[in-house]
Length: 348
Image (cartoon, rainbow, N blue to C red; front, top):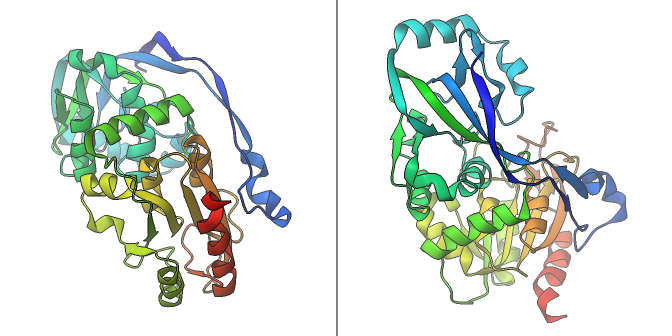
């Protein structure tokens, strides 16, 4: 097993507290009560010696995959049910080894390629070591190289030294520095996430205060679509909302667009990550599966960013009751009622 040491403690342990949603219904306490307070551990900088990295972004040493490869250490147990023999064979015998003598920086886990996890988790880890970036080479898995939001956000952080692992190689790193997660995924150290926000807005934000109203559509997604979206959009348009498909915009355009927004509506999905670029005091309405008490990352993000969080529970459109996949039916009358409160909040 690769040896590691704690180089330094970057941030002390803290506690995140959240207020209930603005339009909270007591019947829905079970959706939120377990997220109202969360202890966040120290953020530490670790140094690993003689550790290997696969092109997919897994850290390993000898015959062991390191738990630091994952957002949560227990995910290692789930992953190990796959063919670890095949993984070791591929990385020790089929791929070309490359020795790296320079000190390298590692900020990703097995989820970090996804938009939300890159912005909220990986960039938070980059932020806490921003004063060391001139002295380190940032190493990223091969699949990140052509992602626009990766390239553009690294430019905003002025990362000068970055290398992408080639698909046909495995890295053998003499010394790898790894900041621990700024918070468990779906939670946020307020100072850190505000720091990430400030870096990205300084690079790409629009300082004008237009107070725009945006509906983020998941029309082209394979899961968690709004089944009656035509009806929903008709109501939203009456309240002055513009429909946007976030995946159609470059990362720079997303930062610009959402930095002008005062109101955002969407069902659970990566597009809601863009609330990060709103000004404090803005409002977010999340359309949620009525049984979903797990996916609270946007409720907690709203709180960390000092945004007003609203929600509306929705029925699944079919027998699929899994909140992670089910399409939703939005009740139009409830939506109209919520939008009246939602869009008038700043006038009260």
